[in-house]
Image (tube, rainbow, N blue to C red; front, top):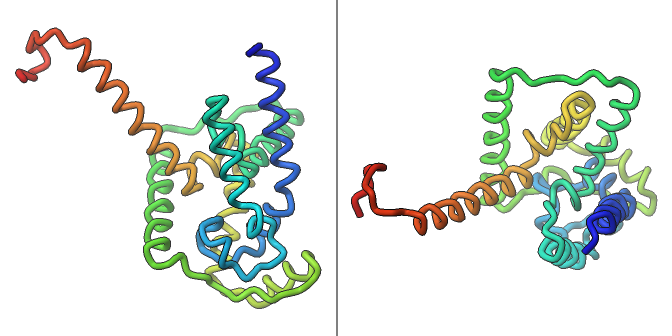
Length: 217
């Protein structure tokens, strides 16, 4: 396939998915009752969330697209990742200044990433609990207002984490995706594991049994 056509198609899919997913993003950020979204959509009481009805179709599409075109989900499919890209690109249009993360801060952020990931795993093992009961309304704006009025501290903590990650993405590209998103961390770990398996397989077949590496098998 022509590289230019492939690039254009990738951009159409990336921003097309984002546009279609805008209502879902608004609900997931401001109204999703679960600690980890997208895992219990079938049982979710938020009846106006598109993900409740179209999650399976999206998963099938995403897996097929990734497999066919060998695209990274976080960079080319995830609508929240695209939102991070859009915000950073707008800021770069206004200011060309870049921010380099100091090594010490990067190590701390990597530690935070795994803290959030472990917390997400614990939440899933505990049944991915709901931290408030959403009230049913016919209006998205009204339902979001009611969420703010009826939710507790856990809701505001998750909301603050999401919004802070998005705001920091103004100066650090894909801050949420790289340092806070549990799904992003999951994909990173899977890719690292596959890369190690692939490199190990290659090295094993290149081995000349010279014993210089200390392996005498």
